[in-house]
Length: 315
Image (tube, rainbow, N blue to C red; front, side, top):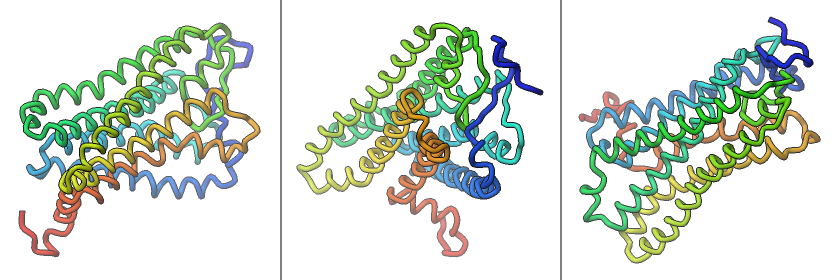
């Protein structure tokens, strides 16, 4: 299917041009991706399976970690299969509906990361600052509500953005990226995108506000944990990995937002591609590794899962 001419206002397919200057190395990129994406799947599935199979890990913090890994699988599924196909294809095109689906999957996944990390911060606050109230506050019903919030709030936000995007009349079909994002499509509009921009910035500020609140709460947690050796140990074990994940996701998301709107085209295409992909490349693999390696009980159960027979470890 050929893309419509630039003068037409009804766009049926989009063309991705982000790979145009890197096609000479596409087989190298494909080989790397073919190894990296299964590694992401393996690490996240390992953590998910470990948490689901062991009752010791059926606690709020580990449920949120499991949710973080499920979201990692969800978000990467919206990019890597299409990216690998494009690396082997001559024409990098996608249907209008396919474009909207990819936007929904990738960006709702990013917002779900923020929501999950926010719930994890609340869990750590209660566990460290109000330990006697922990089990009464973090009930199964409350955990379920938190998990639903982590998914439904991002789904609603991105759905509204996509509805606003779909109402635009577009005068172009070329996207200068490796994947589709809301602002890149909105820039193709023939008319004003003020409503889209206003709601988009509301969503961005809301979720960036999540990160600010978490950082502020951690200042209080640090002061609290300094008072005892046990508190410092608990902070290092459970809060430091959470902070690393938060810093990584926040920096990657804000860079993507700012660069997509204000980035210079003078930067080489290869560098632009790498910077745009940071939040798809790093968090999905970093989160399971951070929690799988740093949390002792998770690490022990992962080892038990794979080496039980060899080591003679029983359940």
